[in-house]
Length: 215
Image (cartoon, rainbow, N blue to C red):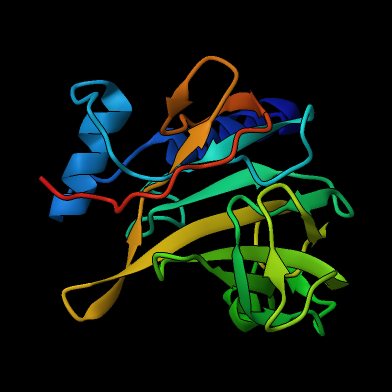
């Protein structure tokens, strides 16, 4: 029988490997995202977003675009956050929808529909979703106009999740269907696609607005 402590380390290591691993690219957007993330492509006209938390603070992005754990087909990023942390608008837009009536969550798929969220539509019709907010954690309402960096809510642990975090993703209407697209963020060193298990500091940098392009 294995000692409890080494076995716990084994489980944590396996969990980390799952988070760090990426699915092989399956679509043109996934392939393109891999090339930008690895640095094989550098010319990019996609929108640059501000990190969705308070300027000057840092958060670890622990699961990224199309990773094996729960983002197999999602161009989403997960930021580790304590419940009650401030969530800031990553880009200006109009609030399309909010949900803040849930106070349950956990590591069980039965909680998939219980995540509180905010959805903001941008001026190019793309939509950003901020998920796993706390109960009554939305500070804005449908129809409100928000600016980049504005406080919009508080993070929580509602919905299907392994640990408290903010799930952020952007979708665009491409080829007559809503498609998630990988997002670049402004960081202290450069504008970039984020890498897992790296801590990033939010800086105040108004995004420019250009369409995400496929190659």
